[in-house]
Image 1 (tube, rainbow, N blue to C red):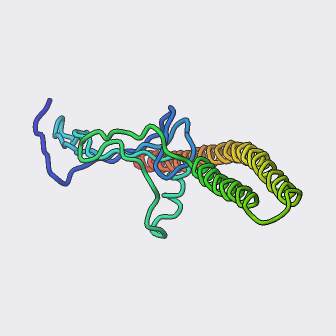
Image 2: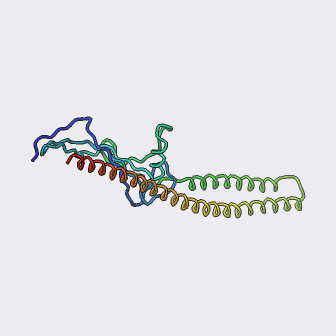
Image 3: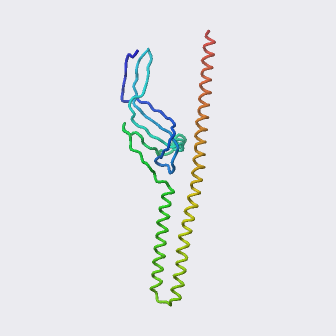
Length: 214
Protein backbone atom coordinates (compact mmCIF):
# COMPACT_ATOMS: atom_id res chain seq x y z
CA UNK A 1 0.00 0.00 0.00
CA UNK A 2 1.21 3.50 -0.86
CA UNK A 3 2.46 5.36 2.18
CA UNK A 4 4.67 8.27 1.18
CA UNK A 5 5.90 10.04 -1.98
CA UNK A 6 9.08 12.10 -2.00
CA UNK A 7 10.37 14.47 -4.70
CA UNK A 8 13.47 16.63 -4.87
CA UNK A 9 15.18 18.70 -7.56
CA UNK A 10 18.28 16.53 -7.29
CA UNK A 11 16.47 13.22 -7.86
CA UNK A 12 17.00 11.76 -11.30
CA UNK A 13 17.23 8.57 -13.32
CA UNK A 14 19.54 7.92 -16.28
CA UNK A 15 19.09 5.07 -18.74
CA UNK A 16 20.88 3.86 -21.84
CA UNK A 17 19.29 1.66 -24.49
CA UNK A 18 19.72 0.54 -28.07
CA UNK A 19 17.10 1.12 -30.75
CA UNK A 20 16.58 0.29 -34.41
CA UNK A 21 15.26 2.43 -37.24
CA UNK A 22 16.58 4.85 -39.84
CA UNK A 23 18.58 7.57 -38.08
CA UNK A 24 20.82 10.50 -38.84
CA UNK A 25 23.19 11.90 -36.25
CA UNK A 26 24.98 15.18 -35.77
CA UNK A 27 28.68 14.57 -36.37
CA UNK A 28 28.15 11.46 -38.50
CA UNK A 29 28.39 11.53 -42.29
CA UNK A 30 26.35 8.39 -42.93
CA UNK A 31 22.81 7.20 -42.27
CA UNK A 32 22.29 4.45 -39.71
CA UNK A 33 19.80 1.67 -39.04
CA UNK A 34 19.73 2.41 -35.31
CA UNK A 35 21.73 3.86 -32.47
CA UNK A 36 22.10 4.42 -28.74
CA UNK A 37 19.61 6.46 -26.71
CA UNK A 38 20.50 8.11 -23.40
CA UNK A 39 17.68 9.54 -21.28
CA UNK A 40 17.76 11.62 -18.11
CA UNK A 41 14.47 11.95 -16.26
CA UNK A 42 13.35 13.33 -12.95
CA UNK A 43 12.71 10.71 -10.28
CA UNK A 44 10.19 10.09 -7.55
CA UNK A 45 10.86 8.00 -4.45
CA UNK A 46 7.93 6.21 -2.91
CA UNK A 47 7.83 4.44 0.43
CA UNK A 48 5.53 1.44 0.36
CA UNK A 49 5.45 -2.01 1.91
CA UNK A 50 8.43 -1.00 4.05
CA UNK A 51 10.61 -0.48 0.96
CA UNK A 52 11.79 2.45 -1.16
CA UNK A 53 10.58 2.38 -4.75
CA UNK A 54 12.18 4.72 -7.29
CA UNK A 55 10.55 5.42 -10.66
CA UNK A 56 10.94 7.98 -13.41
CA UNK A 57 8.77 11.05 -13.86
CA UNK A 58 9.39 13.78 -16.45
CA UNK A 59 11.75 13.45 -19.41
CA UNK A 60 14.36 16.21 -19.04
CA UNK A 61 17.00 15.36 -21.63
CA UNK A 62 17.23 12.70 -24.29
CA UNK A 63 20.10 12.31 -26.72
CA UNK A 64 20.98 9.76 -29.33
CA UNK A 65 24.35 8.64 -30.67
CA UNK A 66 25.59 6.34 -33.36
CA UNK A 67 27.22 3.12 -32.20
CA UNK A 68 30.62 4.55 -33.09
CA UNK A 69 29.99 7.76 -31.14
CA UNK A 70 28.89 5.76 -28.10
CA UNK A 71 31.99 3.55 -28.20
CA UNK A 72 34.20 6.62 -28.64
CA UNK A 73 32.53 8.30 -25.65
CA UNK A 74 33.09 5.42 -23.22
CA UNK A 75 36.60 4.58 -24.45
CA UNK A 76 37.98 8.12 -24.50
CA UNK A 77 36.44 9.43 -21.29
CA UNK A 78 38.25 12.45 -19.79
CA UNK A 79 40.68 12.52 -22.71
CA UNK A 80 38.67 14.74 -25.05
CA UNK A 81 36.22 17.61 -24.95
CA UNK A 82 33.53 15.10 -25.78
CA UNK A 83 31.84 13.47 -28.76
CA UNK A 84 28.94 14.79 -30.86
CA UNK A 85 25.42 13.78 -29.92
CA UNK A 86 21.94 14.53 -31.25
CA UNK A 87 19.30 16.06 -28.99
CA UNK A 88 15.85 14.45 -29.06
CA UNK A 89 14.52 16.13 -25.93
CA UNK A 90 15.96 19.31 -24.41
CA UNK A 91 14.65 21.02 -21.28
CA UNK A 92 11.67 18.68 -21.30
CA UNK A 93 10.62 19.57 -24.86
CA UNK A 94 10.96 17.46 -27.98
CA UNK A 95 13.38 18.93 -30.51
CA UNK A 96 12.57 19.06 -34.21
CA UNK A 97 14.93 16.68 -35.96
CA UNK A 98 17.12 17.34 -38.97
CA UNK A 99 15.81 15.35 -41.92
CA UNK A 100 19.13 15.31 -43.72
CA UNK A 101 22.70 15.96 -42.65
CA UNK A 102 25.03 16.82 -45.49
CA UNK A 103 27.77 14.23 -45.58
CA UNK A 104 31.37 14.60 -46.68
CA UNK A 105 30.69 13.02 -50.07
CA UNK A 106 28.19 15.76 -50.90
CA UNK A 107 30.57 18.43 -49.64
CA UNK A 108 33.43 17.08 -51.76
CA UNK A 109 31.17 16.77 -54.81
CA UNK A 110 30.10 20.39 -54.49
CA UNK A 111 33.68 21.56 -54.06
CA UNK A 112 34.88 19.48 -57.02
CA UNK A 113 32.01 20.78 -59.16
CA UNK A 114 32.88 24.38 -58.27
CA UNK A 115 36.57 23.76 -59.06
CA UNK A 116 35.74 22.09 -62.37
CA UNK A 117 33.34 24.86 -63.31
CA UNK A 118 36.01 27.47 -62.56
CA UNK A 119 38.58 25.70 -64.75
CA UNK A 120 36.09 25.30 -67.60
CA UNK A 121 35.22 29.00 -67.40
CA UNK A 122 38.89 29.98 -67.64
CA UNK A 123 39.50 27.64 -70.57
CA UNK A 124 36.52 29.10 -72.43
CA UNK A 125 37.87 32.58 -71.71
CA UNK A 126 41.21 31.43 -73.12
CA UNK A 127 39.51 30.20 -76.31
CA UNK A 128 37.88 33.61 -76.72
CA UNK A 129 41.19 35.33 -76.10
CA UNK A 130 42.90 33.18 -78.78
CA UNK A 131 40.53 34.55 -81.38
CA UNK A 132 41.53 38.10 -80.47
CA UNK A 133 45.30 37.73 -80.61
CA UNK A 134 47.28 38.82 -83.63
CA UNK A 135 48.11 35.56 -85.34
CA UNK A 136 47.28 33.66 -88.52
CA UNK A 137 43.98 31.80 -88.79
CA UNK A 138 45.91 28.52 -88.88
CA UNK A 139 47.62 29.27 -85.56
CA UNK A 140 44.39 30.43 -83.97
CA UNK A 141 42.51 27.31 -85.11
CA UNK A 142 45.32 25.09 -83.82
CA UNK A 143 45.30 26.76 -80.39
CA UNK A 144 41.50 26.65 -80.24
CA UNK A 145 41.44 22.92 -81.04
CA UNK A 146 44.05 22.18 -78.34
CA UNK A 147 42.15 24.12 -75.71
CA UNK A 148 38.95 22.40 -76.83
CA UNK A 149 40.56 18.96 -76.39
CA UNK A 150 41.71 19.92 -72.89
CA UNK A 151 38.21 21.15 -72.06
CA UNK A 152 36.60 17.95 -73.37
CA UNK A 153 39.05 15.68 -71.53
CA UNK A 154 38.60 17.64 -68.33
CA UNK A 155 34.83 17.21 -68.41
CA UNK A 156 34.88 13.46 -69.14
CA UNK A 157 37.73 12.73 -66.71
CA UNK A 158 36.00 14.70 -63.99
CA UNK A 159 32.84 12.57 -64.31
CA UNK A 160 34.92 9.37 -64.25
CA UNK A 161 36.87 10.44 -61.15
CA UNK A 162 33.67 11.51 -59.42
CA UNK A 163 31.90 8.19 -60.14
CA UNK A 164 34.95 6.15 -59.08
CA UNK A 165 35.27 8.16 -55.86
CA UNK A 166 31.59 7.58 -55.07
CA UNK A 167 31.84 3.80 -55.59
CA UNK A 168 34.93 3.50 -53.42
CA UNK A 169 33.54 5.64 -50.59
CA UNK A 170 30.26 3.67 -50.59
CA UNK A 171 32.26 0.45 -50.30
CA UNK A 172 34.33 1.91 -47.44
CA UNK A 173 31.17 3.10 -45.64
CA UNK A 174 29.57 -0.37 -45.77
CA UNK A 175 32.76 -2.01 -44.49
CA UNK A 176 33.13 0.58 -41.72
CA UNK A 177 29.51 0.22 -40.56
CA UNK A 178 29.80 -3.58 -40.44
CA UNK A 179 33.06 -3.35 -38.53
CA UNK A 180 31.64 -0.88 -36.01
CA UNK A 181 28.44 -2.90 -35.46
CA UNK A 182 30.43 -6.10 -34.94
CA UNK A 183 32.71 -4.34 -32.46
CA UNK A 184 29.80 -2.91 -30.48
CA UNK A 185 27.96 -6.26 -30.44
CA UNK A 186 31.12 -7.98 -29.21
CA UNK A 187 31.63 -5.39 -26.45
CA UNK A 188 28.03 -5.68 -25.28
CA UNK A 189 28.22 -9.47 -25.37
CA UNK A 190 31.55 -9.66 -23.54
CA UNK A 191 30.44 -7.08 -20.96
CA UNK A 192 27.24 -9.02 -20.39
CA UNK A 193 29.16 -12.25 -19.84
CA UNK A 194 31.48 -10.54 -17.37
CA UNK A 195 28.55 -9.16 -15.42
CA UNK A 196 26.78 -12.51 -15.50
CA UNK A 197 29.87 -14.29 -14.13
CA UNK A 198 30.12 -11.71 -11.35
CA UNK A 199 26.47 -12.13 -10.43
CA UNK A 200 26.80 -15.93 -10.40
CA UNK A 201 29.86 -15.64 -8.18
CA UNK A 202 27.98 -13.36 -5.76
CA UNK A 203 25.09 -15.84 -5.66
CA UNK A 204 27.49 -18.68 -4.88
CA UNK A 205 29.06 -16.67 -2.05
CA UNK A 206 25.65 -15.87 -0.56
CA UNK A 207 24.64 -19.51 -0.89
CA UNK A 208 27.77 -20.66 0.95
CA UNK A 209 27.12 -18.12 3.71
CA UNK A 210 23.59 -19.38 4.13
CA UNK A 211 24.75 -23.00 4.20
CA UNK A 212 27.47 -22.28 6.73
CA UNK A 213 24.95 -20.50 8.96
CA UNK A 214 22.56 -23.43 9.04
